[in-house]
Image (tube, rainbow, N blue to C red; front, side):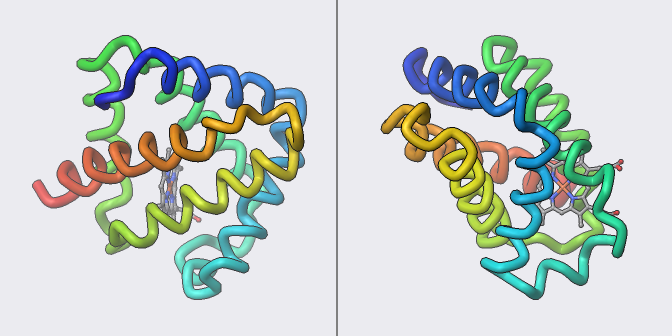
Length: 137
Ligand code: HEM
């Protein structure tokens, strides 16, 4: 992931700031995702409890590996392979990125750095590329 140090810092800081609210934020994240694209609801099992935290935990692992490109790449490849069966598109990752950013904004309000939106959008674009490429193999 080709992110500069300032972008990595804003990703780490905003993700850390979210942690005290992680459980609530996970629920809101999926609600927002399905509002943005109701078609995505059908991909997930009915009971979303647990799924939200799995996503947050996985995202936390990614954020924790920002300075370890090789392990990060392997982690994204594993995730990409685990997602291959869902037939996701780049647009789906874009929607997820938007839902995550809306959740951050709602949860953190003025605490959220102004540069966070751009940094998360870039990070999701790169995660998407790595995950989709691994899924195609
Ligand atoms: C940064 C990107 C993403 C991360 C970190 C992530 C993380 C995860 C994790 C950790 C799981 C659980 C896997 C398991 O239980 O073994 C999962 C499952 C899943 N993910 Fe993702 N995911 C990402 C992107 C997406 C996108 C863009 C979509 C679709 C819009 C998606 C749809 C799903 C679905 C449908 C499941 C299965 C849920 C179920 O079984 O009910 N994921 N994801």
